[in-house]
Image (cartoon, rainbow, N blue to C red; front, side, top):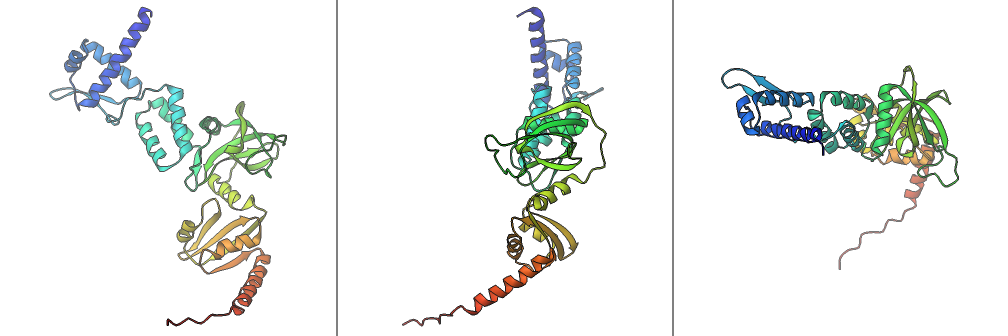
Length: 334
């Protein structure tokens, strides 16, 4: 190891030791720190500036009782991450999107250097939620998409046809898409990207876990007037992706119904204190009807008209089935 490398390592170790001392006590004078570190007060001042450059809030005060004091974040351990590691850690926490992950992200934000804090917050601003978003995805893909949303950069990705739900069978067609990414949206099950599909000239939502070969391009785009990301994706997941959709007026509060239905299964809109509208979809209208029936609330069918006829037919069958049941009398105990 050459002399320059040795000096650099010594400086790094001394700065970390200084940070540890500042975490141990509320206030240190310059001479006290110089004595503990075995350096001059001038070197202490330089090391304090190094900590400030890294984003640690070290405050200095003059006079009796004055000295150096570490600001918010003093109870947290040193952040020994380079720029890419810190950003990757933050995006990985976003990918988890659970309560614990978000608490950890908040703590990480407190100790990030200013230059990184701005970037991570910008990436976080590219993410929206409905539900709790707990399905893990590749953090590198998520980071690429979040940065592209932030930088307004075109993205290329491979995406299977919509009729494949989970895994693309060998030999099946995977289509390359060129999109203008707008927002990442986390549901209670999966991550989605709201983007403008350049080949289809329209807005589309894409499941992040189904994407492959995701790459940001050098082309920049001018943002278009976009729909609300969370609402668009939620409505698409709850209705447009299914062959049959239906709307109901449910006689219960929106909060009550939202607690009964996963956010990815239906869109619930408030229509009054004890009234809401439910938009849902399924493979058949009968399945949609049964889902709403099982909520246990009074309801009306708003759309489609065919579903109203199905309700009457189902009611007639249920009445007929009930009328034919033979009731067995209670048996008396001997």
